[in-house]
Amino acid sequence: MTKQEIEKNVELIREISGCDPYKCMRCGKCSGSCPSFNEMDIKPHQFASYIINGNVEELVSSKSLWKCLSCFACIERCPRNVEPGKLIDAARQLVERERGGDHLQAEDIPELLNEDVPQQLLVSAYRRYRR
Amino acid sequence: MKYSYYPGCTLKNKAQDLDRYARLSAAALGFELEEIPEWQCCGGVYPLGTDEIATKLSSVRALNHAKEQGQDLITLCTACHHVLKRVNDDMKNNEDISTRANNYMQLDEPYKGETSVKHFLEVLRDEIGFDELKSKVVKPLEGKKIGAYYGCLVLRPGKILEFDDPENPKIMEDFIRALGGEPVIYPYRNECCGAYTSLKDGGISQERTKLIFDSSSGFGADMLITACPLCMYNLNKSEADSKVPVYYFTELLAEALGVKEGE
Image (cartoon, rainbow over all chains, first blue to last red; front, side, top):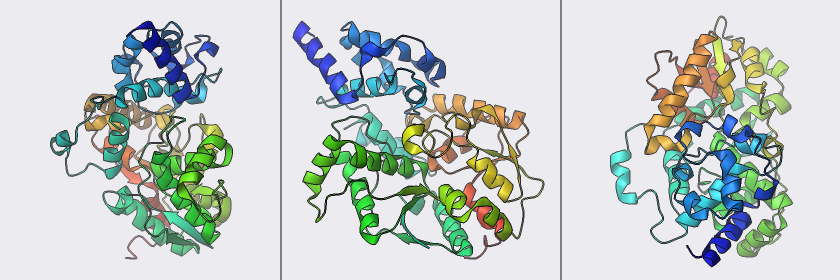
């Protein structure tokens, strides 16, 4: 990414999320609450600093994008309204809004099914993994 | 009392029990669920992006229908509840989203979040009342130690969902008491089950559900209740040694009201 692309993406993440990463004081409440903490390479309390420091390329290629469960624990507990779950969701949107950014293909669905899979699981996975 | 009712896609398929027992129980308690005609899927996950409009329109259509009927809108599935409640909040309090959604919808009268969205459990607590519910119970769940599994979607973010204290809820425990059962309070009752990751990656939900079952069984629960079809699925697929049976809360409700075999 060029410097301009990085700046544009930082601005997009702030716009899409509606959150201000500069308010983060790194208290760690989000990482302490996150059920996917062990699965993430970049941890919730680090999301804001990656954006502030322009490390967007690392953030959008992080596996953390696909490990957030949307449980809203970090959003509920953030004392500064930075709401890391919204920041990582905006980073995910940046990826999925690009051509080829989908994390789930329709052709893959049949082999992921079993007779008990609820419709809610399919629609939720579709909304999280692709546009 | 008549309510607009939004069942959602799963309650028409894999979670028919959640729907069926709710309808039977509502009839026994004297209120009616009038299904919204031609409702559309809520999408399962609330779109967090501030510029997401199209993904919210199916919710707006359902909310506006309830407004036109002059009815409150009732949900059962916690995912539908979460999405509808948050879109309603956007339509009420987020001028940008509300304006753009209304520009697209071109309704006779713009929708501004007028509808009141209530979960079925909130109707039991706030409209029927748990004391009144208790008086209608004919087969109390005596001797049953029941753990309420709330999950995430119905509780958080507490400021918008306004369902109960998101860190220390009690509505489902009060519900269990009203039915004559003994609620078991355990720390993992409002922790995530792994959600949609179980479609591609069962590892997270296996780990999460083991924690939930170890925690609830450790505190003595014989069974869990839930209002979420995806929590139900992930819990049922758990390979935890401490696993106990999981029921939709409406099944125990219908059983206690003596209407379970009514259909």
